[in-house]
Image (cartoon, rainbow, N blue to C red; front, side, top):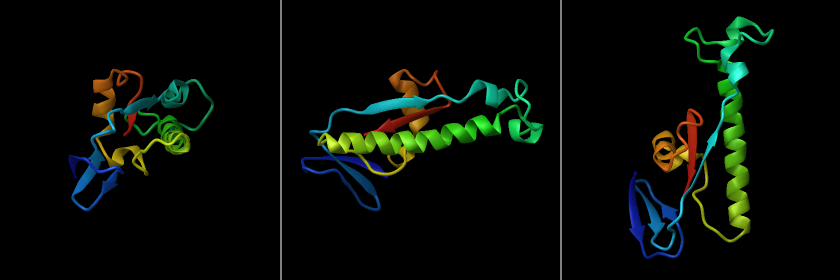
Amino acid sequence: KEYQFTDDEKLSENDTAWKIPNKLNNMLTYSMLNCTELCLGNTLSIPKYLASDGVGNGAIGTLVAYQRSFIANFQLQNFLHSLGYQSVRGASYNICPSTPFGTLAGIGEHARMATVIV
């Protein structure tokens, strides 16, 4: 979808574009750190097939981080809405490529997953 900045009061979307009000000029970005011990898999007594996907990427650590990311995203958006702010509902990747945006914001080094809320 393309980004369209409009003079509308409310954020909206259709099949082809995100319609972002010009007055919305802030973006929150955060990262969800993967658990190093679970990703390495060699410091815990867990089965090797759960600890690694065979390439050295920790399956459990990644799965836990993704689950925490969705929960944090939901909680943060609800908090923002309770304060009267607008945000795009849904998963963080609905509106942008989250990892590049996180890297550009300076937090991309913290974790593989950098999440953006507009």
